[in-house]
Image (tube, rainbow, N blue to C red; front, side, top):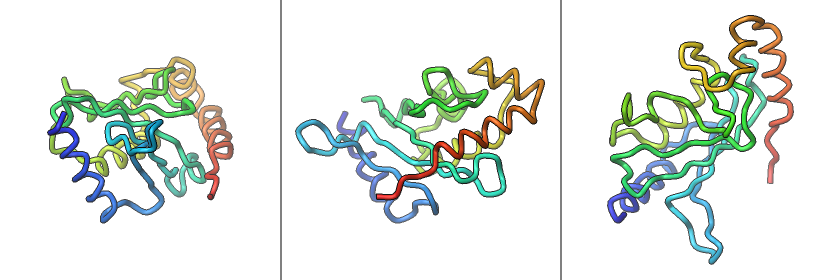
Amino acid sequence: MSLALDRLREERKLWRREKPFGFWARPMVSADGTLDLMKWEAGIPGKADTPWEGGEYLLRITFPEEYPSKPPKCQFDPVLFHPNIYPSGTVCLSLLNEEKDWRPSITLKQILLAIQHLLTNENPLDPAQREPYELYTKNKDEYFRRVKEQARRMFPKRK
């Protein structure tokens, strides 16, 4: 696990220097008050000029002990209405699949940008959630209406 923790410490430093505008990410705090580098939470902003605009989408990221050899699990909480998000909130993305496009060199920044890209570039060839998939493929107007409604509910709460 030491390799994973070393890498995550580096990721945290890199994130602080190079985080994209509108995004945030941080390790979660354990019950004893210490930072848990293996569990993060992040906010992904909806892209401007898309139905996702205005929303901030909360993501929980769990890094396995084998990280970076194995990819993290990324889950939206609450679950998003999207054809490539499983009913559990888990993101269906080849970049996060070690059998497909995962590489140990992929950074947290690349992961979050790829997930933001997925939100506005749905992949109907890899559906994970039935209702959004059916609306996206059969009634895009209704699908995008639902996405806009969701974005309004996910408006960021400033602290």
